[in-house]
Amino acid sequence: MDMIRTGKFIAELRKEKGLTQEQFGEQLGVTNKTVSRWETGVYLPPADILIMMSELFDVSINELLTGKRLSAEDYRHAAEENLKATVRESTFTLNERISFFRTKWLTEHIAVMVFIGICIIGVFAAGIIMRHAVVISLAFLLLLAAHVWRNHAMMVYVEKHAFDGSGS
Image 1: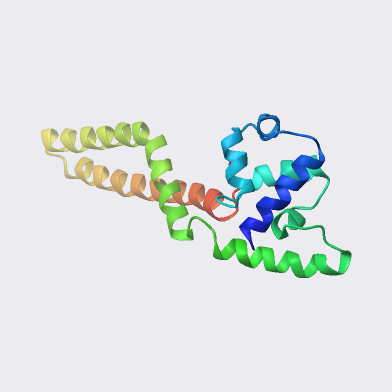
Image 2: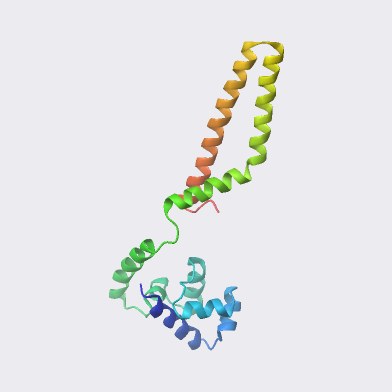
């Protein structure tokens, strides 16, 4: 994928529509500087913006990424090459996405985990005060159950967001 060719093609399509960079940017919800960076090949537009451009210019995303209009026979080859290039140039690795969504889940659920932790400490302290081994054992079982719940809930969230992106 040639980002400079893609950028020139975006500029060409924008001009065909009679739009300035500022007008085009307003339609997409970005600044004219961002449009300029795309058109000079400094950055590639994100996927959601490529979809909007595709609809606005009545071209395929493959054509946008290839930087030219494609015939039917060139389309399949371009699609495969663009997909390979996109995977190679992906900003985040799978491990980075997993780490990000784990941290996000933990941040969103910290209050629940603190509350559960306080409850478990309360059960443990009650067991010690009452000198009752069964209550102390119950605290450890609750701790184990809380850990299993946290790990399971977090991994369901991570898988839903990091692997297929459908959780957004």
